[in-house]
Image 1 (spheres, rainbow, N blue to C red):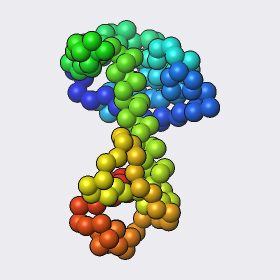
Image 2: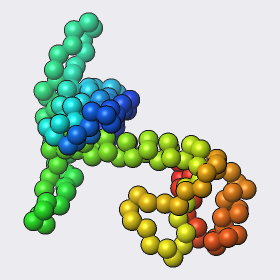
Image 3: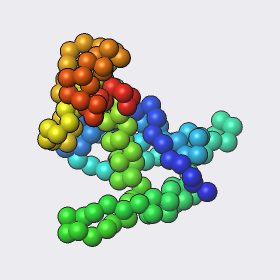
Length: 158
């Protein structure tokens, strides 16, 4: 029974991404690596390859793919006409990849900068104030003194 699906070892090729994100990643189910996913970034579907290892022999695991297909049906997305549509395997993996890529981008943005939002100011999704220099507790204290205790500091979430 599938309880948890994860994406690990995500490698994104931004320079190859045209209509979709070009990437390779490992697929893990219930803490065990069971396959790989990849997308060439040209707008096509994500290739999901699940395999079964028995000693030196590796074969495609169609049974696990079918089980994953059943598992992802519990999740839905809203179509353009407002209907709730169950996920397919490739679309579900794409969603996991997008979330993992966003985490990577947030970590990258916070590596040498302090990233925050000022309370009461409207921001578009994904937009923040950026202060050059590494995040420190002293910077956080200074931001809270200047903008109030409700300032949101993204660095504190990663």
